[in-house]
View (spheres, rainbow, N blue to C red):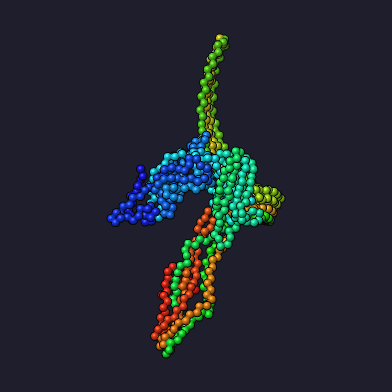
Length: 632
């Protein structure tokens, strides 16, 4: 069942003509139109570059809109994981109920990674789009379908390149710059070729001449990938550009031929696209070019004839900073240098050290000894010892030290370094450079150092203490040789000590140094690079000069008793356009606007009863700004 959309008559605009709904009846503000519905495809299998027709209903006429065809599903490749597909392709209707994809995939498989054959499985839907934006949603009924991509030819690369460089293009270029070499790389997907033929349309430089006929190049071999380098011819004068194409044919081992046509446009790096026609921009005030002409009593005939020439010029100039830079050269460099440094360094210092230390201590020792001896003799003895000792001491010390240092040194040093380096750059337009260098350095160094100093030290110390000791010993020896002895001793001691010291050290040193260095360096650098850059200035000058060589002749009557005056009025015309620039990958961008002026003139005879009569020419007016600042 068809889906329908109800919209108000005020939003239809130009859709009424396209959709064939006619004019809405009075009192009926609602109009019903069909939405796109996909019913079928012209084939279930297709090669890259072939024609695919899509059948359905509700497609807008190509004069008012188009259909966004959406493929939603997955792409199944042998021995690989299915890849998701969500692809929208804008297509126009060629007949009622038929929209056409003229070249399926253009130059590669539109599903997956673009270089494998397989089968799309999913839904195909369509959304109507109109140039005035009056209807964009919703999309209509979809079609569940399978579409198999057969073995095909695909274009892997089409980009500008030269010796050691290539343009960094994300996709194969569809616009080429005239006179620049482009490399084309094609791959056989799903089959193995035995013969490859490149067919060039007219408009290429072969040898040194531009071709006016088809040119063929043949490459034998079973490699899946082949390439060719082509150079589009220069764009002729007074032409914005031209179309060219490279057709690739590959024959497999079964004799089957597969073909892919790759068309592209050839442009200058800079061009002007005119967006308007010549329009009246300003009408200047009418100016009298004659005195009062009396009609007399019987009327007179007066004639206006311009015998002078006038030139009106307006110039527009814009400096473009987009272009290409090529550099090939060798650079030599030599550098010499010398340096001399001299200096004197004085260092002086004083160090004072003061020490004050005191210590106090004491000790007590008790000793008991008991001895028993049995025998026939008996002896009795008692020994008693008691002693006290005092000790006092002190020390005084002084010292003085002088020191002197003298040091003289000299040296010569030198080094030589020889190296070579190479670098290959990457980026939008990589360049290359190689270089070698020789570096040398010799130097002399002299130094002198002298120092002297003195040191004074002084120490004072005192010690004191007392030691007390006592002991008692005794024994008894009997005749039976039995004896007992007992000894007891006690020692008590105390001591104290105090030490004071003072030290003062003075030092002074002086260092004198002298260093002389000479250096020499030689370098060689060779480079060859080409780059698309913003560094080169390319000036385009647009100037319009209009010279009015006066050959205008006109006659008119000045009636009796009347007066006449000839007037002349200037009208300024203007035309605007856009300056478009192209990079090496064929991408265009607007660089600015251009405006060109021209002038026209008109005479008029004003007649009246008094002099001067008013002019019949229109009043001065400004229609397109700026006005007033530009005068012929």
